[in-house]
Amino acid sequence: MKDIEIIQVNISGDDKPGLTTALTGILAKYDAGILDIGQANIHKSLTLGILFRTTTKQSGFIMKDLLFKASELGVMIRFTPISEEAYNAWVARQGKNRYIVTLLGRQITAAEIASITGVVSDFGLNIDAIQRLSGRMPLDGFSQGARSCIELSVRGVMGDAQREEFQKELMAHCGDGMDISFQKDDLYRRSRRLICFDMDSTLVHTECIDELAERAGVGDQVRAITESAMRGEIDFSESFRRRVALLKGLDESVMEDIARNLPYNEGLERMMKILKTVGYKTAILSGGFTYFAKYLQQKFGFDYVYANELEIEDGKLTGRYVGDIVDGRRKAELLKLLCQFEGINLAQTVAVGDGANDLPMIGLAGLGIAYHAKPKVKATADQSISTIGLDGILYFLGLKDSHLEAK
Image 1 (spheres, rainbow, N blue to C red):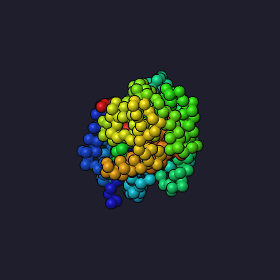
Image 2: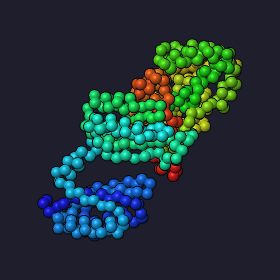
Image 3: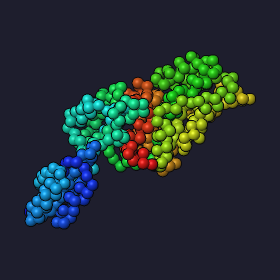
Image 4: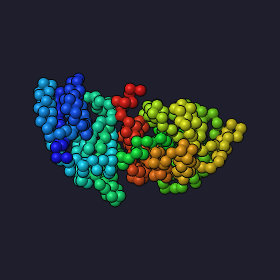
């Protein structure tokens, strides 16, 4: 195919209506074949790239017409010839060894971007694309509720050991102001279907059993056991039995009062609204209590609820529970069961939690997220969010504010 030429055109300048139409119209006039096209806009500036194929006979006429049109439109244009060998090698790499690195925080600084792109470079990887998933940042970047998210599309060859080392290096750059997610960019990442949440200290900013204990006058005793269990220092099931026993004699009406005043974590309402809009199934898998989980289900529309049932007799808590304890092992089992019921692959699931008893489901899910988690959990999970609210999960799913706000 010696009479065939492959040419890359790069255009930059002020964005204006009709620019892309004018340039592609010239290619259409000469029946050139567009092999690839991409465009990015920052503020009012445009960068447009077009890779096209044409004949040697036509290439000179095309470049001349494009040059004149670019001058007329007031934009810069550059032509680069591409060899067939280089093009075929580029095609052969498509869809392979692609990863997504997500930077998340109240505000992402230049220093943070430089540190992460430096890690990417050190591992011999290439950044194919960068896009902002969050809305346009106001000048007061640290205003209440501010969110900033940048997604890097990265390509390169890494073995399992190198991938683990790469993720470790990325996580080492997480600090008070930035969270990082590293995911393989495969089919499953783009087809998540089910998200399972812990409840206490994940969906709500409290441990419900601690709230009950305060009303029962045993707050310090129960809180000490709770914190020890969440740190993984004692068995969850045993700690659960001991804490529930301390609630004996508490009036049932206290539970309703606590439920009505639960402190929801930042971003819960927005997250649930968007997840329901785009068709995700949602579940609460909690080591807490069914009474409070059902209250959240009614208010926010969770599809499934599995938690622990307190035994009540004559309007008083007996200090016992009904049925099996929903501990870490049970949460993982329930995640598998929900996958079977929904007819989906485990790789299509997301699990979110903060405590040691959440680690089994976080490790089992396709995407496991430690949310404002205890140190042991954050160190173990592959992804974590500590800088913003629950709606930060939407960015890890690849959802973009400019699309979401249009709903």
